[in-house]
Length: 263
Image (cartoon, rainbow, N blue to C red; front, side, top):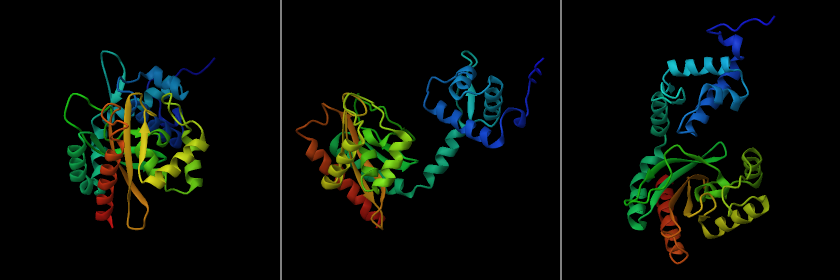
């Protein structure tokens, strides 16, 4: 006869400490990517762990304020405590302070939403954003992680990396097909990175989202390393074939001015 589960299992009865930490972080990442929230059962299935283990981790995270449970649906969402971590991380990124006024100027010159992104564990993550006025709003936010192969800032961030490092990123994250125009062949992607290096900017031509076009350029540090990427995002009606070159030059100029301040 199997031993019944206790109502409040101790950590060692659920998962090893290292596994518990890994699962807790995975739960937070899953909730960050799911605005509508996830239930205990859904998280249990997603990470292939017993419901009792998922319940223990969720209770702990809830007690610390990192997740909150919606009484009506029973689903969990990120808690306000996460914002404190977010502020602490962003406060340590001095490049945001340098870039913010130039991003605002870029937005005003182009009429497009401007972003600053950095490379984090093989993905591009927005660390600053200046929204363009008007009714058209881009589905982006500070903290959003994106694949590098289908975004302009992602391409700009990895174009100057050694090929072996880019290959490692592709092995880890793959080349997921986000739209009919997404590059899914490593050969084609590396050819695209050659173009980025040659022209000094990258283009996401509906590769991440149909109907959206983005332009990005690298920000270089004192040693010539890529520290970040500046980008603008808009619809294909806002960034057209006719004005693409002009927009790209404006993005390159903004990235260059930030680079000069870092030198």
